[in-house]
Image (tube, rainbow, N blue to C red):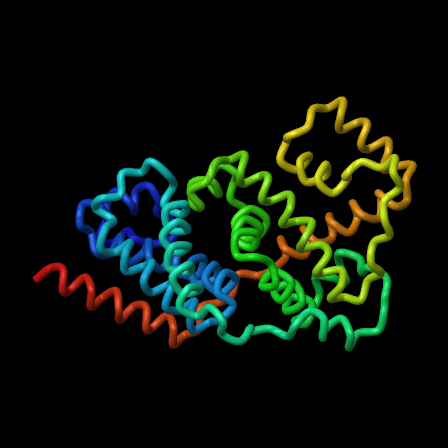
Length: 278
């Protein structure tokens, strides 16, 4: 493994070597996961400096305990679990601190009213990304984390449940509410018109669409919903805006790890490993 630790080596092989004490294999694993961990920290904490601390603590935990990792979950799921715990600690320490992003009501006030943008318009440019990030930051922490893990990081509902320590059913319930809340905040931020009250005959299509995405409704119910949406402009507009919201989330790029942060992470991990070998 000493000369083969590169991107062509499968992660399970690297992990097995790292657990046997192969420093090069462990270094490669840390390098492969540092951007994902740092990016998750940025999205959860809203601050690059906090994200650097989260990434450093997470990678140090991995370096120190990799030999004890038994593989009951994937390595990435385990890292998300560790990183989430450090993010929560950061949030508790900084509770009451000024928000990192422009308030949504100010952003909405300064924009002229405009129709809901197409997915392509929504995903273009730095301003659009910052608007989506601000809308995410405005959610309650429990809502934000399930959206980040499920709709941005792409974890399965079962993996999100493992990371957050709640049931799959609770993850999905929280996710349905969070998606609807995010849609409302994002629509307000881009100057879209607020939704009119739904006709009494209309179902809760936002929850239904979210449940459909999680395979929670059977084909007959799904067909009924799609038939209703096809003939109801109000519900069709709601569904379109939720789809655009989720498309905007999926398109958020994973932040690059700045060079000075990479160097800081390497130095901290190397020092920890050297100390553990004394």
